[in-house]
Image (cartoon, rainbow, N blue to C red; front, side, top):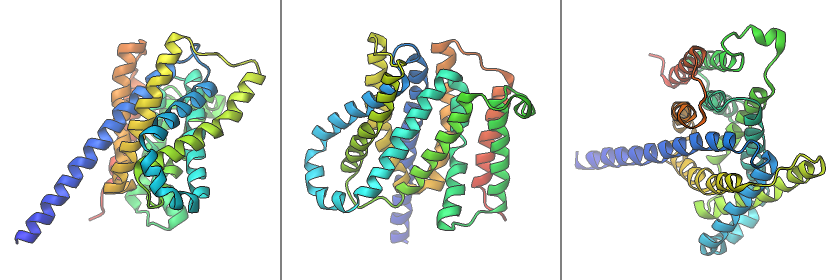
Length: 305
């Protein structure tokens, strides 16, 4: 009995730690959506992505230098996987994320981002054969309807006539990419989280350079204003370092399927921030869409009797 109580207590402590880490992640990701919207006109999306990861890589390179040295053999052995995770989960996701915010609202982006757990379910099934239940399929369809309501401004049938807003379409692609990254996290190499994040940040900074170069060549680059630099530094420290570390550690503790549900908190935080800081309007269709998305993910988490 004593051993069982200790195991139960350990399980509770693990859950509390994971929930704390993932809630902080959601709070910082909500801040990232607000920062991305504040960046419009102050620093261009591709330059913001490149600077964000360059700053993050420099900070982590100093903080994690001893861990990196100790993990160097494992890093070299797993470099292709690490490079793919950094390029997809960090660079491509953020390029699309910040570009989407040029064309759509922070509230839209946040509600659409809340559908990411369903992308995790789908990718786990496709690549690893993890069983998908009827409730998960029903939850997926409900969440997809919520995303459609968001992207269509309350009338999903409008998509048939006018198509998706380009920003909302970009966000849906970004969600799929980050879902793939989240699935891969469960199979990351056995290196310390600081080493892992430092390597991926460096990869992301390098992978961001072609996008920034294209932006410059197209004469679309906006060099950071004072406000742009403030946004850039925040995204580098908060969402890029603290949130990514908390997300990775939280998923390691309770798994990507259970942990992914914390994405649902993001639109709640974002809506509050967007109303207070950006003056965005939270409409009835946003409330309906949020209920559909969160309800769909909740349904997908339930077990059939």
